[in-house]
View (cartoon, rainbow, N blue to C red):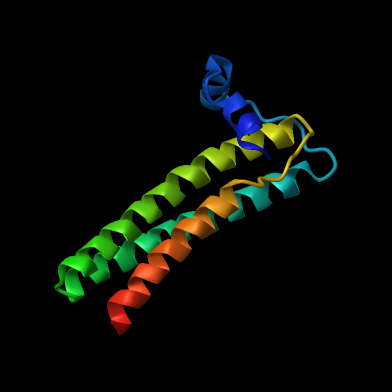
Length: 129
């Protein structure tokens, strides 16, 4: 899924209204399985975000240096970003499942991996330098 198609869902007033008044349709084919798999994926992303926030808090509190506090803050922001991203991605997937057209996200994973690699490099420098 590209960011352009991802952003097509966000500004639409109808999309936000349909979230509030979501009416389930009869299960046909693999729809229920797809929706449950989407929910499990959402929960695993959410756990990952909470783990990043926990690591950030541990860095900030257990290692009392300015650089450790910076790394801890970065991990907390990474966790918050993951939480917001997974929520948006969850609803985009629900709408795509409902419309019987699913496109894989090709941009989001690269952004998350890049952020994590940058934070890991800073953490490595903090621990071994």
